[in-house]
Amino acid sequence: MFDRLMPEALNESVNRLESEPAIAIDCLSDQECQSLVSMVDGLNYRNAMPVTGSKQRPVYQDFELDYCIPAKHALWRLPDHLGSQIASMLLSVPSVSVDEARRFRFNDLIVQRYPSGCQGISPHRDRADYRLVIGILLLSGDGNFRIHHDRDENRGQIIPFIKGQLLLMGAPGLSSDFVRPFHSVRGVSVPRRTIGMRFDRARLT
Image 1: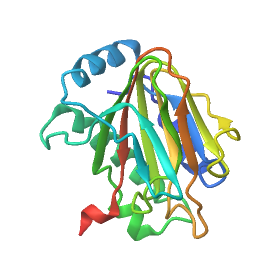
Image 2: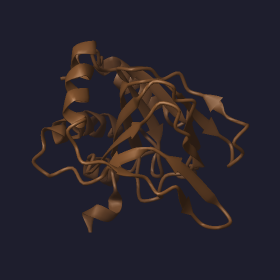
Image 3: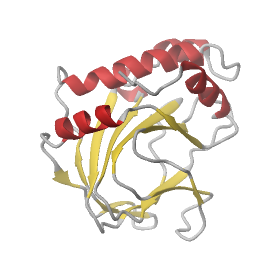
Image 4: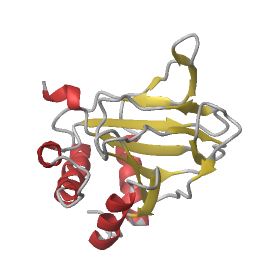
């Protein structure tokens, strides 16, 4: 599992998230990507709501998703394995609460498919209940993952992120003054498949 993921690279990236909003590192081999593509294509997808958020701050979405992965589905092996590695690394990050690092696990799993030519998703921030570190595996396709200073569509930094990589993005709890980053996905011309993994503090209650 995770044939191309080096523990040293993962540890370094987790520690860099205090100062960098998102980092992508090698993780999956081509064979693993192909196997996971076959697995996720058998899920039950629905279209994302075209517009979400508030009237003052709408978020535009154009992709498919499955957010109801059964608890015993083989896909859960990915967040379980990866989350345990990240949890042990968070214990050595001085700015992270030891109690929260010990509770950390990826307990929220979402699979998304972006068809060719779709509009992706406009700049938005993830929920504040998603804590410490967010992980995204890119199984196929292209597109631009951007970090934005605000909701301005035209201002943003492209984070290099290609098939087979794991993108790590910081989340609240990583430091006392952490600010959730705005991010977007645009420019999909080849079908894009991702697996998103998050630690949802609300699910612990």
